[in-house]
Amino acid sequence: MALDGYSDQTMSRQAMRAELLDAETELRLAYAWRDRRDEAALHRLITAYMRLAISMASKFRRYGAPMNDLIQEASLGLMKAADKFDPDRGVRFSTYAVWWIKASIQDYVMRNWSMVRTGSTSSQKALFFNLRRVQAKLEREASQRGEVLDQHQLRQMVAAEVGVPVHDVEMMEGRLSGSDYSLNAVQGADEDGREWIEALEDEGVQAADAVEGAHDGARLRDWLVNALQGLNPRERYIVAERKLKDEGRTLESLGEELGLSKERVRQLEAAAFAKMRKSLDGQSREVRNFL
Image (tube, rainbow, N blue to C red; front, side, top):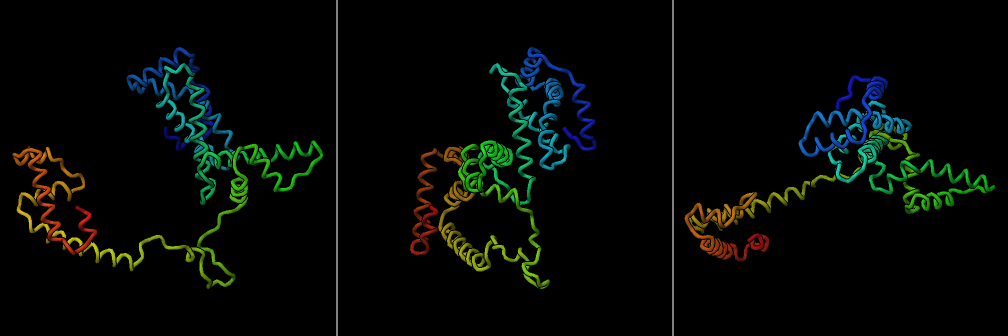
């Protein structure tokens, strides 16, 4: 459902004008989509519950994401719900769809909150969306008792309330309070200083490793070519079809092509490997293990 060019007010008005489905009609549409892949039934089901998706999307506006994007994600969650919904379970579609809509919006918010990921585990997600609310609740309750909580006490209480380790609370506090900085920023006051990006470790293959790997690979190929040349054409063909292709052929398929039994092909293969082992004897354990 493309929403580009539509304002959230326009989409809200359109959703509010959509029909309200009773349980019987909802069930009939769900069966039509599940059993016959009736796209008209799917469209009617999705359209009827877009008001639910928009309502849930509006609850996440405080995270700073554009409303159109939130509605887009909510509609994707709604469509996933429709695709996975099983009408035989006796649950209303709206009840089932709420979970998928919320999950889709939350994933989008967490992906776009910061250039650095805030986390994706269930505990991190629970903290991201509940940390501030739980902190405020605990501080309010402590104030009503005439108590003042220090940061350590508050973190321990939040961890117990949400059901996560204390170090996860500390980590999420740091991520939510920090800002994104450019890796092209200069480390020191000197304009000619090194940029932060220059301090990152290069995860690519190092030059020495690349040269060594290329050399070893070439040597292995030469050994294998020489070993293959010691086979007769039929043995060489069987080895190539069985071991030198991404998807090796079966003994049965080769037997049908060559007019041989599966057992005879296996014997020829074993004989070819014995010849190759003899040729490669004393060359390299790696190549022998290949066979």
